[in-house]
Length: 429
Ligand code: CMC
Image (cartoon, rainbow, N blue to C red; front, side):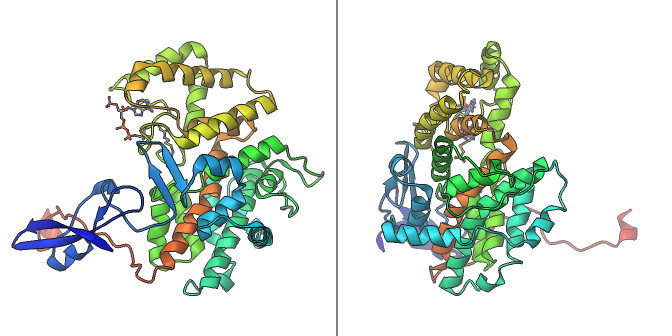
């Protein structure tokens, strides 16, 4: 409900625009009525535009706050497993014991993928980037699960969401196995969500898996930390696709595509590549100088954030988890990790980085952690997509359950040619 109005005077109009208060964060001015008066707003990159109303995630970048449904991210990562967090994002409250058990069961009963999907994978080249397989495989699911595609029915929407959350680790692990030419490993329902993923990733059909609990807990935290981040590029892509009535698998595939870019989900892969490029502690100062040089496009990957200008609250949790994993696998002494730790220390003490509030972000530590777990950097964005699927679905469900939602159809400021007549080809010379 609007409590106040903003006044806009333009052409011959003086218009009263409703201001809506947020429960947290700044209020917004409702400009949706402007089009009736042939007035439009422009905002490239949506820097000043709230695309929707949402109750799922809140970020305060200046204070370093990230809340899922009101709960701080560090408390969720420490006290809940990923299935509890997924339930929270989807339904708005943390589950009680019975709700958790029922949710776990629902997810576990959907982890297998149709056997035809194995044939679908065979069409790809072996060395291909796993994100391109994942994008296509997720979209293909829409062709296999017709019985839950009527998005006007809440039970179909929920069933599709369960299917997607359950099958995305299976598909992600298949991408990895396929790229290595190794046999696929079927899911095991007695394992937790993150244990099952590690089992499908590193197991073999020839023997029982022995999933390391420290690594499973670290993977679970990576899932929680990446599960949602309000209206980021990939979530917005899912909402835009969903606003047309597209099936849920097509919408999630749109999210996977948008996530792939290095400015979004590709940053932890880029961070690892940068560490490999630096190669040795003796070259840190050379690369710091490159990062500070305005004529050099090089940036220190894994440092800085568009929204978090104080610190990234996910990075704090990830830093501790990163050290646990390094200790567990005995990787703390390898040259790459020593280099990463030295770089972190030097950058944190450097005036350039301090002045600009450029702290290590979640991707700096998640890249190092995943690498220590033995996961190749091309899989990092796949794992991000796996985790973010729950957030994407929560936003998709929220949007479709709002009866007033509309197709996303932005307008433009046209600066092209004015109307002119076509001249025949022969006369154009
Ligand atoms: N290395 C060196 N200088 C930097 C860096 C960096 N990583 N990040 C920002 N700066 C400088 C920038 O040159 C500018 O300097 P000046 O004020 O002298 O012109 C100042 O800091 C402010 O930078 P900005 O470009 O205005 O900041 P932004 O909010 O537009 O960019 C960012 C945010 C994340 C794109 C950027 O910090 C960056 O490119 N970081 C490296 C990539 C990275 O790690 N991305 C992962 C983000 S976390 C994933 C997620 O949440 O999706």
